[in-house]
Length: 110
Image 1 (cartoon, rainbow, N blue to C red):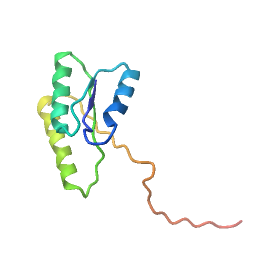
Image 2 (cartoon, helix red, strand yellow; image 1 turned 90 degrees about the vertical axis):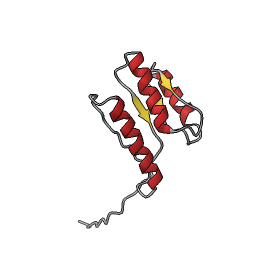
Image 3 (cartoon, rainbow, N blue to C red; image 1 turned 60 degrees about the vertical axis):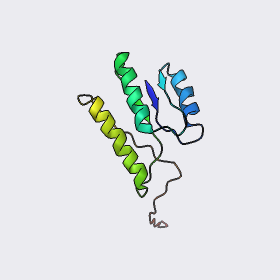
Image 4 (cartoon, rainbow, N blue to C red; image 1 turned 180 degrees about the horizontal axis):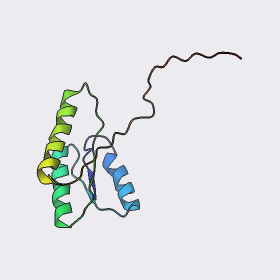
């Protein structure tokens, strides 16, 4: 099951619906601007009801300096831990390909 917990980015749910269909997976979604943690809760509830053993929760992007986004992520994690305390959990960090790091390179001619 896939949970569309990115309720703010335009077309996020629609994109996830396409991928869920391709993977033949159920999808849980809510109205735009819904509380992401409540969407995750509903997804977990449906997964339990339907004996689904893998739930992927897609959330909005995060910036470490945006406190409200980090607080939202903590809330989502609390919901998951409360509803599935015994489950194996894994977080995947997806980094934008345009993210850069500075590195000094020196080249030598031979």
